[in-house]
Image 1 (cartoon, rainbow, N blue to C red):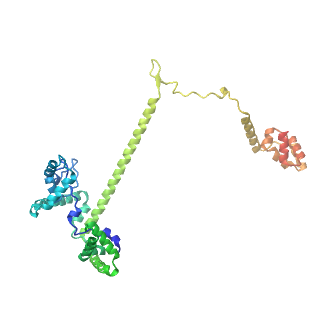
Image 2 (cartoon, rainbow, N blue to C red):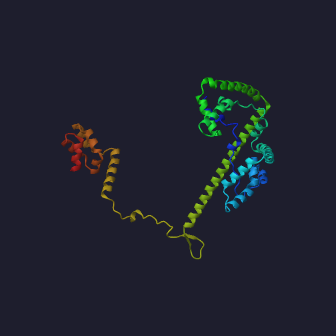
Image 3 (tube, rainbow, N blue to C red):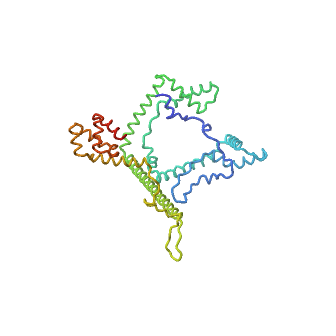
Length: 381
């Protein structure tokens, strides 16, 4: 364990309430009166509303004195009364108030706490049945033991040393400084110093585990588990219903948008009617012009395009096989040039040049049977 345990229970249980309370007397006349604050109304929709948290005795006292203090300060300061001045005056009067006079406000605050507890239980039963059951059986549910660090911070002797250390530094022993000092002391403590607190923690932990085993076997625990399952099912069902609602709204919005777009496109197309007839005729601007017939086209075909067409036709002819004169082929076979003749005659460039079989064989004889030189001589001739 180390000083990181301070996040678990570093709260100072003996700190003076005045240090943790923020003095916030209301500074304007529009704030509700204490009676109005204590009342809890139902929502117009009939849904159960979360109850308002209880107010403190000091808050009730500040509300009762607010107008009186504000008027007094305005008379003393040319009609001015700042929030800070009101807070200081109310705080001073509360500190000077006798215990017997404070009892009136303490009783009202306690009554409001009881009101809040009853309303919170009704709210939890309606909105959070699991929390309501846990509140109902809180006396049966085992409490987890305090950590070794928490026991260290709660030890009177340790706290006294921490207060003395803070005071020695010339600062007031506030709750925040005291908690910080306790964290430093725990981190610097030796194993022997931490030992008693760790032993106490594990001892309490063993007792907790025994109580926990007993609790898990009770019908009250089973009731809470059942309520948790039902509450989780309701939550999932509510989420599914909300998702379905959102999908339906999105689909409706998309359909409406498409419908509006279609209407807008129809309105943008002008229509004129024939005189004396109800038939509608599209305007010339909206009617696309017919494409000209091939016979009407006057654009000449470029020479390069003609050449490409010729080569394409030649390639198609070459795929089917060259047309070679049988006599020339027999003559080429006698020379051993029949394969070269077929190869050269099937070349698209030679086919496009429309050379005869005799001319192709002559070119092969001149090139010594070499196909490419023969092709060059044929195309260049």
